[in-house]
Amino acid sequence: MLGKTLIPLLLAGCSTGILGSGDPATQPAAQSGETGAKMTVSLGTDTDVVGFHFEVESKACHPGDHYADFWYAENVELDDTVFPGRIEFLEDAPFDGDSAHLGADFFVALDPGCYTVTATPVSAIHGDEFTASCDCSTATSDKLEVEGGYTTEVTLISQCEGDLVGAIDALVMTNTPPTVVPDIENKFNNQCETVEICATGWDPDDDPIEFDFTNLTKGHDFFDIDVGDIELVGYESGHRLWQQCAEIVTEDIADYTVEITAYDLAYDEDGNEVRIEDLIGEDSHGWFQVPIHTGWTMSDSCIMMDGSVCTDEGDVYEGCTVISDEEMYCSGKYDIDPAIVALICDGTDLIEDELYPTCGPK
Image (cartoon, rainbow, N blue to C red):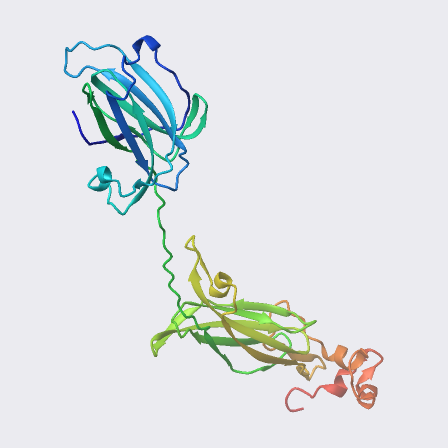
């Protein structure tokens, strides 16, 4: 088999080897270059390869043929030439004439016969030792025939790993915070009376909404707050309308401020529903502050015909404490006209007959 031959490749793992030189008795008789094989190995430029470990082994040209055992190995560094390099021998095949490949050229004189040649890419050469490449594969021939007086040339290709290119596909979307509108029937109440505040909200992007009712009043807590379920109450202008109501009980005589906040919702990587502002690290909510003014009113009490006091407790929330008439007028804790105190109080005791009317006609 004479002329130019393209040889397929075999994969090789990373390993360290020691070069062995064949028995001198089995070396070819002629070393003049008249008889032999010349091999060129090409590979990509961005690899760990610094050269190749070549092995030549004799084979039978045909099944049953007699042949002399021969094995030879040699380490060869990469050639300074970039191939094909406008070399006519390499112009037509295997690579395009304008391409550029690194390679190593190995020449050895051989007795006529058939041989297998293996080129293992190496990442390091230390004398007779070598370290196999982790980037490129081993290239090998199969029964390369050598005839007396001729040089059999063959080109092997060591295939190397390439760099895969990734991509970023960025989709950006706008987001607008929701709007909240409160509804309160009466912002004035007495101690321990329930005030209902409802919030209606929508999101321009039609995201789901979460409402939050917060007491901003310093020094005065709610006695109780009961927040109902959020409900879908309508659909207008391409978005859903949501509503949620809270029943608030105040115990202290004070001016309360209730802040209603509406948050738009989305989902995190685990599929959990979260506030969008927690997802993006920027504010995305609407809010509205509603006042509740809690005052005190004298009890609706009167003196019955038998002299006992009849008191209507009214709508007092269970467990909530209302300031009594006696405490308001006679305890001295509150700013009451001293002249009134002198008329209806006996020390800290309330003179009920002076404060309460009679119950019905006498």
